[in-house]
Image (cartoon, rainbow over all chains, first blue to last red; front, side):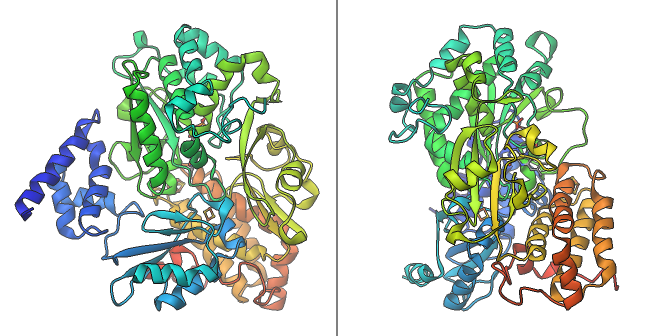
Length: 160
Length: 441
Ligand SMILES: Cc1cc2nc3c(=O)[nH]c(=O)nc-3n(C[C@H](O)[C@H](O)[C@H](O)COP(=O)(O)O)c2cc1C
Ligand code: SF4
Ligand code: FES
């Protein structure tokens, strides 16, 4: 698709989301999820502008909403994301050793992206998998439980 | 009861995410029964069954239903909103319900909609639950295609990562396409909720419990659980326990039975140090409280809250200052920033706890901790502020000696051997939370 076709397609999809709500503004979260998917996992300024235009809202408003929620990324991310929960139940089950293993294996600190752009590594709050802790979320899919000794294999899989 | 479907019990060995199998297990019979009754009769049954909300506050569902004005007393549409934002640390029950018995939830939503004569149901599911969203959305499609909706529409709406959106008024703002910040109340949602219309907000498990009331009948339902809170509840058991997981049991099961019989005791046979009975947001219990029954009133009488029935087991390797610090970093991170006591107070608490843990605490810091807690408690717009205090204040109260030893030793008495030593939180990975010390600054 050409950029113009892409843009038209995006607006069309947002119109569909808007149509299911009594008030079209409710579609903003769906529109942001969609835009983030189409922009490689984050929301560059032009993505926020596309959403603003399709939603008939100002870019500032869209930015204020996007910045409120943890899942909307306003900084570039790698091709993959790895998230480790370190909230209470995961912490008690040894989450820090999993964090340490990822930092070592990836060569980055939590919150950073590897130099080759392959993986963004983050720490997250309770993911709702406390009964099978520690929880790791790879590209939005849960892996639970993950132990420090499983980390190397996950990283190899992602670096493929 | 064992093979009869309640919420999760009876679901073993079937794929109840499929309509056909759910129907074979008796599913959607309650919906049919409900539609054969008048809304007033239904509200009466749910009230008589004393079904209490499973989302945290234990508010009677029947009373909430009766607060929603009927079609003749309202000018616009009314709404049913299912709270599927489950983000309380320790809770993972709604997730399993949506994944394994999505039609149970859909059936509950349709009955609730019929009860308040609403045509619009929204299920607000936390954004991280992607697999569950897919299962639930597919089940919604299947039920709609089978003609079960009548003139009702169900929409599954994905959140995007914010604990505060589990608070019902913040959830409604979020659903309206805004930043998810709590609203001043009153008015409460049953009167002025989504799009300013009357709105019933209930938790996933509350709604998924409604079908069994109609199936069993009120009297049989009330045989389960305790008089003040009948029925079953799904306890989420996690932490240092041999068999963590979700256990659906009658309300009023003791901590001892849950942890030692169902959970097979503390992992590795270690000594029990603490039990958090309702998710990270509630006051902690000590091992002498194992016989407390896990129902709303009994837990409250013992000084805590059942909350989301998420039980976290803590063994003797864990430093309570570290646990408090990790919990408080969560509340600081999740504070929506709308009111000062919560926004600023959670930061103060993090800084004080960090200082004590690092060995720079002064004697006066222990009093200061309590003072800061007092300044937040009851002075915030929503309960998140209180949650941020309940945990830490109870750790200080119940493990005072351990806090005192940090001051006396000028460091952590565990050395580096606490089970959660060095645990890093999301707030640590953002540079902007490098904060000046409010006490020395
Ligand atoms: C900070 C905060 C977070 C909450 N999170 C949730 C949640 O994730 N799920 C939920 O059902 N209720 C949550 N609640 C409670 C809701 O505000 C509300 O009481 C509940 O959804 C009502 O449903 P119920 O009566 O069926 O329990 C939260 C409350 C607060 C203050
Ligand atoms: S108490 Fe905290 S989370 Fe609740 S409204 Fe105030 S700042 Fe926001
Ligand atoms: S504490 Fe990690 S998933 Fe809940």
